[in-house]
Image (cartoon, rainbow, N blue to C red; front, side):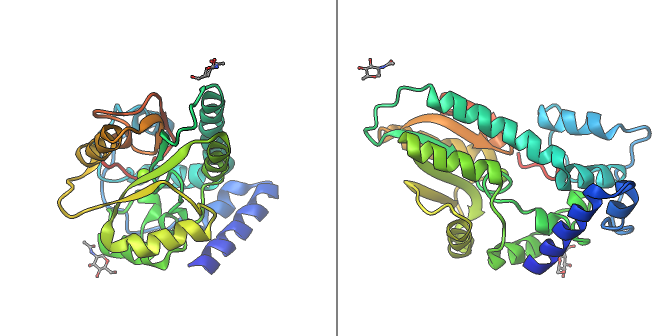
Length: 256
Ligand SMILES: *[C@@H]1O[C@H](CO)[C@@H](O)[C@H](O)[C@H]1NC(C)=O
Ligand SMILES: *[C@@H]1O[C@H](CO)[C@@H](O)[C@H](O)[C@H]1NC(C)=O
Ligand SMILES: [Mg+2]
């Protein structure tokens, strides 16, 4: 999988210099397998904006006609720029906080599509950038590979926050069964230290319910959540959201 992604990057790099990137990049897109969800005259940029603003909820997959659009967005420069703008703004905010350095000022990061990228998996034919319905078996196999790259802007922010004196908590929807692979993956790509890394237990519920309960528990033992960053609104909504929340883009899947 690592090699496949390397090849993908090579292909993308050559595409950047090419006069007609669309046709070349289109070769990376699967041509079959996406099922249903046709909307006539759907504008994919409008769709993505509605996703990011949480106006669209509980969607099951990327609309078939937006698979190519989302593929271009995720593999191209725009996604990277959109993430970097958020992480840079988060750093400006964090720098301006007068933290007490008593070890209680926390920054919460989600993992999937916030600190680690599953894009090598999502770019595969079997997933089609989310245009093919989620398959837990396949996704969990990918998680076990522990091969997800870091999201560069998030890794940079993580290091800057530690430098400023923040404690880091990773709060992830990844289940405890995958904790070993995930922890290895995090360390391998540069997330080497943390106050806590919280995996989801079997009775934790999901989405907002799970994440707000864990944040509440952190505040109850005296931590101050100064910032909270995630790719899903369910990382940021609910009680105890933190002093300020930051949403990084993710048009590939929805977790409520
Ligand atoms: C920062 O906090 C400390 C201790 O609470 C306080 O003495 C200091 O004046 C604060 N500095 C700023 C710039 O607010
Ligand atoms: C998920 O992928 C596995 C492995 O390819 C396959 O056996 C299974 O049928 C898939 N499940 C669904 C619901 O498509
Ligand atoms: Mg996530």
